[in-house]
Amino acid sequence: MVGDNSSLEGSFDTNGSMFVDGLVRRAELRANLLSISASGRVEGEAFVQRAEIAGEFEGTLTCAGEVIMRSTGRVSGHITCGQLVTHRGAGVDAHINVTGVEELREASSGSSHGSARGAGGRRGFRPSLRWHVRQMAPIMFGVIIALGSIGLLSLMPG
Image (tube, rainbow, N blue to C red):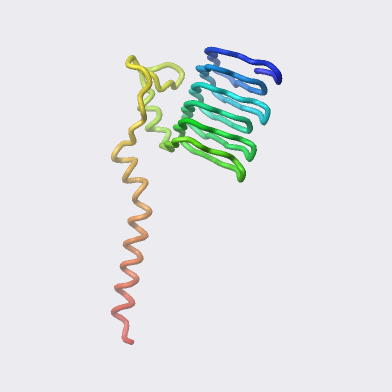
């Protein structure tokens, strides 16, 4: 826990939770849960399983699961996560990549603690063809149903 009116600089690695009420600068954080309170601020990189942000985060956030943006939360930089939940009033000025947990695991395989770092430094997440098909399937089914309905209506006597 980084308490109110406290600051931390550098790397921090835990299998548990990290609660930030103060300031964390030039961070490289690895944790199961990152929780930033309304008075907290994190600047740097974080590799986590889950994040709750009520304060400020500036940098690169890689989250295998869910990122919850509370109404007082502000994020800028890059977010890659499995799911993004934003409450009304949350501020997001970031490049966001919401991808399935499977793709995050594949992209981070071979590195410790779910990190997105490989031997060559940071790498981006590239969704697979299967991921794209899953994203497009509901839209395609909707188009097929709509066109089918139009076709049926045109066959009905006027």
